Amino acid sequence: MSPASHSFDVLIVGSGLAGLSAALHLAATHRVAVITKRELNDGSSRWAQGGIAAVMGEGDTLASHVQDTLVAGAGLCDPAATRFVVENAPESIRWLQGLGVPFSQEHGHLHLTREGGHSERRIVHVTDATGAAVQDTLMARVRATPNITLFEHHMLVDLITAPKLGLSGQRCLGLYALNEATDVVDTFSAPHTILATGGAGKVYVYTTNPDTATGDGIAAAWRAGCRVGNMEFIQFHPTCLYHPQAKSFLISEAVRGEGGKLLLPASAGGTRFMPAHDAREELAPRDVVARAIDFEMKKHGLDCVYLDISHQPKEFLLEHFPNIYARCLELGIDMAKQPIPVVPAAHYTCGGVVTDLDGRTDLPGLYAVGETAYTGLHGANRLASNSLVECMVYARAAAQAISQEQAAAVPPLPAWDDSRVTDADEAVVISHNWDELRRFMWDYVGIVRTNKRLERAAHRIELLRSEIQEYYASFHVTRDLLELRNLVQVADLIVRSAQSRHESRGLHFSRDYPQTDATAQPTILVPPAH
Image (cartoon, rainbow, N blue to C red; front, side, top):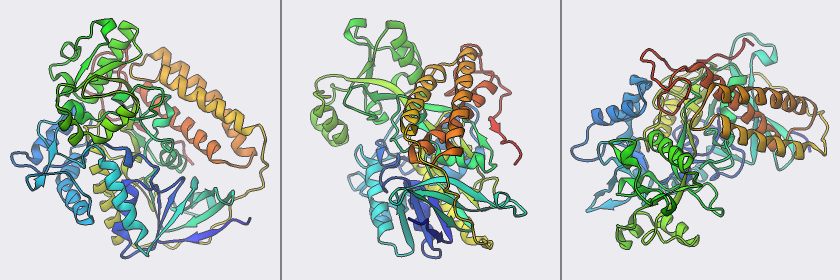
């Protein structure tokens, strides 16, 4: 089948909270394409359980939310970005309420819960399935909006820039995307493109992320000449459900916020251990809790630890955590009577494509929002429930910036060169390389790092990169090949960033540099000159 060519005012790659929010903000005045590599609801947003952080309760203040964010970020948050998000968070909640998101209520007001690192109850939520409720609401609105065209099962191949076409100047003119229905690469042109492809959790063997989180936007922006920042700071969620049938199911921070305690298994004493690691105990930030669990698991040779909230009445658990309760019960775990087995897992990419307060990247015409972006909000560690609100605040900011910007003329774009052949062995090789990459990233670039481990990872990445590039240059592209290409690029950025940080801070802990350097700055990597 022949490839198709599409022209829009704005291209949005990704269909999570960031992408769909931007689409809805732009649709009144722009023709918008939402391009997503699987189905509309397959991203990370719908997996968010805890909620959205915003100052909505009496006694809470914007200054307190800012301070909590700065403390969690371990000295590397950008103050302007932090204030910008916190100040705009309440309006984002009201916007979602206006769209019909059924936030949990108590006595006629929003029910606010508390999570690790927060000094106040400020987590707006829909029981323990906030992401799903928000995503379902946005999807319904997007599907009903005439000016938004959806392209599901379209995988970003690469961005199209002026230099790639031999044109003068630097600008993003559109993108190529693999249409899996036709197995050909289609061309999309637009004066504005927004990357909202999420993070890169699938670079690790254990992750809470869905299969779509392969760093596509980060890798594509890097190849197009954009800087990336703070890629060494990968947040590991401390409590992912440990069960062979529970793939990527996380146990919300709110379980600890409502009194859940972490315990060693009976074989190791069955006692609490967080008091020995941090004065904040179970309410310490995620990096502290994840490292404590990792330490105890290695110390005692454990496969997991346990999270116990069985002291709360069953009625309380069913009201606050119905989805977690139901999922655990399906696996034979009654959280009202017994503790939940948990392990840390890669959860959130704090770094990403460098942007300004409008979501602009280094490449004119290209924006990045959500987990794909590095705005400076998260610093060296993301405060719980700050991610969804960042998606909304920057989606709106990017939409406003695009609306105020004079659209540049986009020349006709050439079709993708699809003269490459299909190789029967390609799928097997890609599968093996994928498994190898995720395993050695977990072993060498995980919760605790050393110089030697990073050197080993860098060496393995270089071998994989050359092999994958040979496949990419010679054979017909597939989604698996494209995802592996992106994951290897992101893995390289993570390792290079980690090697450049000669200290331990936030989510980056090095045995070779256990102290914190008071003069350290964010890690900004600059791509080779194009």
